[in-house]
Image (cartoon, rainbow, N blue to C red; front, top):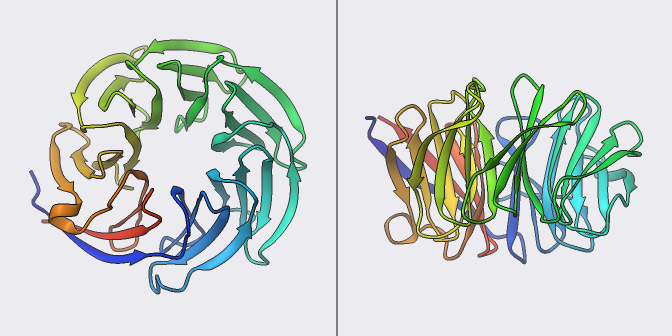
Length: 304
């Protein structure tokens, strides 16, 4: 097992409310953040103190999705639908009030936007004009997270009805329903090779499913003390990180699923409250975390 050294590089305090989302930007040293203050900010790890406001909306933002080809950003604006932002000019291109509900996640397949909504709807929108293609009633509980399989033929949804539902991305039919957890599923991620699906949520368990064998359960781990909010893989797929309402971040081996490192307040001057989202960057192997404590932390992860 590798020895991991962790150093806190920076703590950024530009936001005035809880932070819920961090999203990659155009360069591997850039990322977006957003949360309860409605501000969407762009940061540069080369000069992290100089954040730029890209957009401001009236309500909380739980979901962002960056479109690298056009340098546009999709913003899920709670109760007000989706906004398409021109990042370079910091201007709204268009918006669409697709729902009155909270939007918990946004993904894009080809030219279709997938929005996970608080009323259990998966809303499909046309990327060209944000017009609604379909509203799929998946559950009467919230859809909290979306994971797109690397082959883009399947989409997995994590829900507050404790299930994972796998849909075909060609006709959007239900292919598989997994009674996955004892409570809400907050985060799901496919491994880089698409062989595994990782899930976690309010029950604090990390579960690994075999995506090649009808999503049979491979392993179940009591991974944190409280709800697990997010899973983020390193780009090479060898390691992944989890973060939790218990204020900690953990680093795991993606083959053995062994815990390698705990990052917390006592040992590393970690977050004071719930850690909500992670982004493991390609820039100097730095990990970005956002929290209810209104701060963004930047961690230097050194594998020895």
